[in-house]
Amino acid sequence: MGAPSLQDGIDKAGSPMKLLWRQNPEPWNPENIEPEYAGWRAEQHAWHDGVSLSDLSHHMFDTFIEGPDATRLLREVSANNYEKFAVGQAKQFVPVTGDGNIVTDGILARTAEQSYVLSGIPAAQNWVKYHGANGGYDAAFSTDPSTAFRGGADPRLFRYQVQGPMARELVQTVFGGPLPPSKFFHSVPVALDGRAFSALRHNMAGQDGYEFIGPWEHGAFVKDTLLSAGERLGIVAVGALAYASASVESGWVPSPVPSIYTAPDLADYRAWLPLFGIEGQRPLNGSFYSQDIEDYYVSPWELGYGRSLSFNHDFIGRDALLAARETAPRVKVTLVLDPADVRSVLGPDHGYYLTYARHRVELPGNRAGALIGLTHQTATLDTAGTILALTLLNKEHAAPGTEVTVTWGEHPGAGTPADADLGFPLIRATVAPAPYDAYAATQYRRH
Picture 1 (tube, helix red, strand yellow):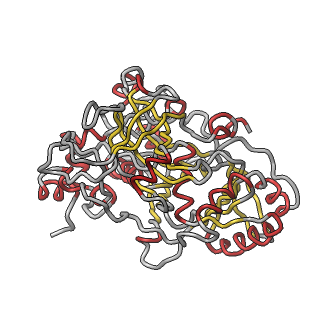
Picture 2 (cartoon, rainbow, N blue to C red):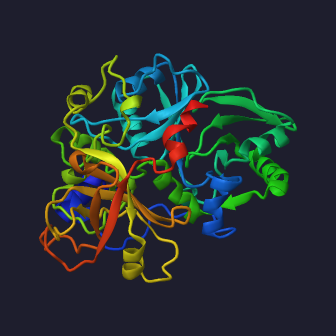
Picture 3 (spheres, helix red, strand yellow):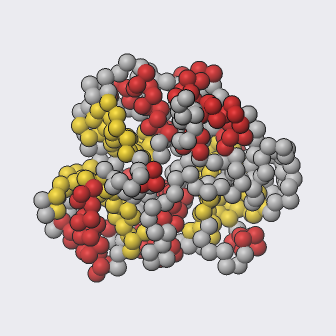
């Protein structure tokens, strides 16, 4: 008897929500770097005020895709434009199911004419591999999981993200001058002491910087070189706590629920997926609970991916996605939680807080009333002086400055009505744009 599938897990639990719902869950993908190096506050300030280095080599999965049909496969399972996708370029990968909702995104880098690397959490990678294996495509796949699931082996690639106002000065110091010009999300080849790798114009929190990517055997040398050269600039190594908060600032929702749990035509896919993978193990929690997992599905339009979508080709979910252009009900915003309410609920010395909980968002005075949105990632930002919540909010309530409330708590799940007033505390919040960081919102793609 083979290992249980996702569908086996759903059937045994009784529903997708009974399988996934957990109060105060442990992370499904444990971190493999230190939580803090200089302290999370100093590390958050480093990418705003100086220069920081984040080691991204351990928390992501990488799937390498190559073969004569690699581009055709990717084109037919995602909403991206491949006509102007240059070798050395990367883009937000946007696969959707037949209902037009997202499977989960990733970063897709084109490394040769028919070679790609898809990075991030593995749900989108599983989608590609399933269709590649079952659709008659001449394409090969190999996956390097995160360090937590690699069984002690080294990663195939190192990834070091250098960002902040002093990032370019550091880069010029290390490479003896400025790097060749490149557009946002484009890379250039670089080398240090004969060690070749690439420099991708990218960042996570709206600040200037690069992501250096290359073979793991060169990783220690490159990292030591960057840190040594950055000493005079006060470079700060970023730990897992601060790094996880950067996506709240930059407006990237890192954990949308894959819209794969209910459609009858995806039964074979659910039977192919392992139960002990992200789709069966990444938990759901928060003050919002619904018995219907479709209430957690999200559209790429709601996530702000409109600029990444292309309808110049046929792909799975194309018609449904196109139809949702004007009908997707929510928009991505940042909620700025009231500092006094945060101190009242979490305590005056609450310190760092991070959660991916789906908390209820309502209008003031509507305890357990009309739901107008859900939080998707919430974190303390010392640079903002409070907790921020990256949220999908109904469009009619999404104007900056709108006052809302966030219900703070852990719904027990099945057996308790979704709209029950459980006495959870309410935290006042104010709507702000996403990305929250003004530079991220207006500047960094122009360079």
